[in-house]
Image (cartoon, rainbow over all chains, first blue to last red; front, side):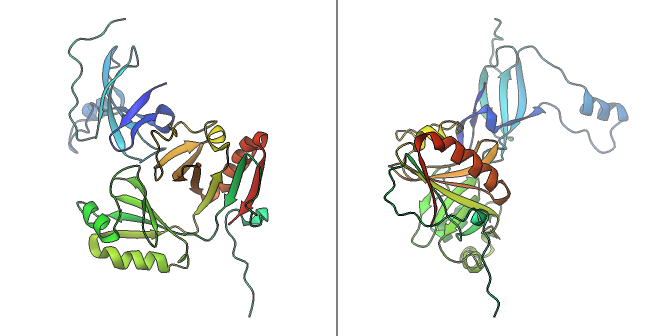
Length: 95
Length: 194
């Protein structure tokens, strides 16, 4: 179970949030190729380790939260607003 | 002239006013007829709206005003409660106060407010509420949106006894009432309405 630090509400239980996917992809321009849109819609890195992702605080303030989470250990390194640029920790932790 | 029965989300339960002398561990009261309005600040106008209404823009802290109570929902959004004005006059009053800084949405008929008090309040809430409600963390005036029993709840700590107001969507009021009465049953529960 995660405890996620919502920038507005403070630390809240995971049950108040919905996972909303990879926060590292951005929508291609309107006239981009079909290949670019295919990659945007379907292709993900699926990293083993640190990952920047969207969580929607749907059971709380209904804001979107950017979260740097370790997919291996479930550790949450940092959270922020959608506009924040969040860095991963320097050393990748291994179990 | 025809007589109208005002219907509120829990009025079909036929609750009557409590005597205030109950020894039950939990007291649950439906609070029908409140005037409720949601206020939205326009972009960059959060502080202006807060100032016009005399309320705080800080998260998780209720502002009790002479005529209304404001609970912050998210950046630039509040839910405001008053005891009169559910006919729309509360909404119009707020619109007049904030002017062009934001918008007001009438919600009196879309929410049900339930007041919970008694010695076993925290025992009941802790069955579903994931927030830390200890008085060292959640002081009087604490408010938050969370989920309990799968229902979105706007909660507000009224006093240190403790007493909480739980505000849910009208359509979920029956489901939520069912859960909270069942969860309270083991402590002895008195049901009433304001």
